[in-house]
Length: 559
Ligand code: TEU
Ligand code: CA
Image 1 (cartoon, rainbow, N blue to C red):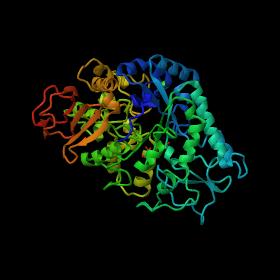
Image 2 (cartoon, rainbow, N blue to C red):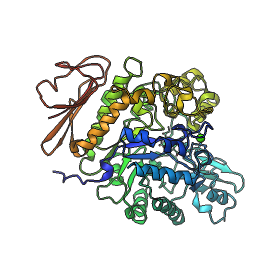
Image 3 (cartoon, rainbow, N blue to C red):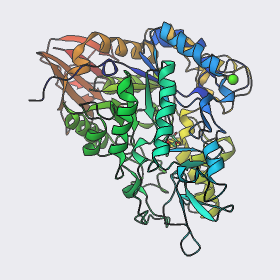
Image 4 (cartoon, helix red, strand yellow):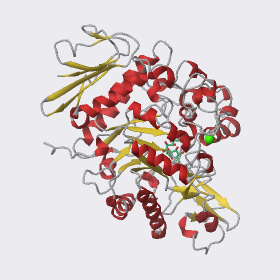
């Protein structure tokens, strides 16, 4: 018997992720900003979320929209000033909403002062802040491919060596082996904690420790090597996080979540140890990546959709295996993922609302801390990419250059179809506030085009509609706040082989919750509820049928 789950505020919270560039533009320059977020705090209060996770707001040249930081103690000019930040923090706190910051310390921008120094000479005091190596036979030090296409090493003329960048060449990997780098990171974290923030979401924290032998990786179809065996959950990652915990995290009461692409369950149990020595929880990627790479068109790019069987097997495994020993984070969407109603649900007009609510139910009744990504609560959808010129994301631009232009492995039409399906920019189109020009996001020209469906799908129309996706999310959040079984109940998978239905139960102190979701657009046989007479907590249908779930029907019953 696992011991009783330890209670914590961040286990009971619902998180709302804001991608500031696309949330709300207060000054009409077409770019979302901090003042815009402050204006919308009442909206978040209405929704009922407990915490906001802000994607990076630090100074950045925006090669990767803030995930390339040039000064950790300054605010990005596009987003405002430190004063604007302080106002946002105070306004949020006053409304009872906590603020979690994005911590991007696997890499810095190449425009960070440390790197400007580091590249000057081989003897510069900042040289070892980054990872410099000699080339091999006139080529890169090894065969690793960056996450954003092309080699993970960039030659630098000034000193005749290569530096490592697992992401774009303007995102230079820090050398965590260097204790000075770690001191700097702990200092800047302390700076933000002392300001009164409530936690950190740690960007690619699973990649900070690299195998110092820097061996070639297994060769991929495009000829480059895979760095993952040598950089994901590398040799010293847990040592580093325990040190960070002792030096900073343990001194405050924080929510911490590590972004951990490629993390296994065994590793996750170490990162998110229930003894609190490392992090509170991790983001795993298996359930959002079940289709990537499999029968795909080129590298991760595919026009395929995930299958219930795969998604369910993955999520059930995480639910049951972390039981009692680590805490899950629950998400469908974030700024790196396509819109969940388009990917996992059905964004055709006749099914969009139902399937968005079904997906929300399916996730929010699970065990773990749920994350809602801006616009998800409106059932916002993917958009259509008619041309590469409309895209803004460095990943899309680099993939286009490599696969369409340089290697000619895929036609422009097919690449764009892949973008329609899974480009990160789908999540980054402006938040749809109302039916006015530019969806009420800006009075200027938006930095990325608004999804044309904003006239139909927007917050203003949903807030007052009791049957909207927004009000459904609102209710799910309320239920989590009201019923302990939703937070701490044990997860029990049901109907694991059913071709259409995702079902499970949750149990706590004699209370039992029954959850079933039809993942298809057809009626599906289901007798789960036929002989029960519990209380229905939520459903996306008013009437039910005996022996079946209707298209995309979701039901939650408390027994
Ligand atoms: O993402 C890292 C990550 O592993 C992926 O989600 C990655 O973006 C995706 O596989 C690319 O297809 C984090 C941030 O969330 C992302 O926005 C940044 O671009 C990246 O790190 C680099 O900082
Ligand atoms: Ca602005």
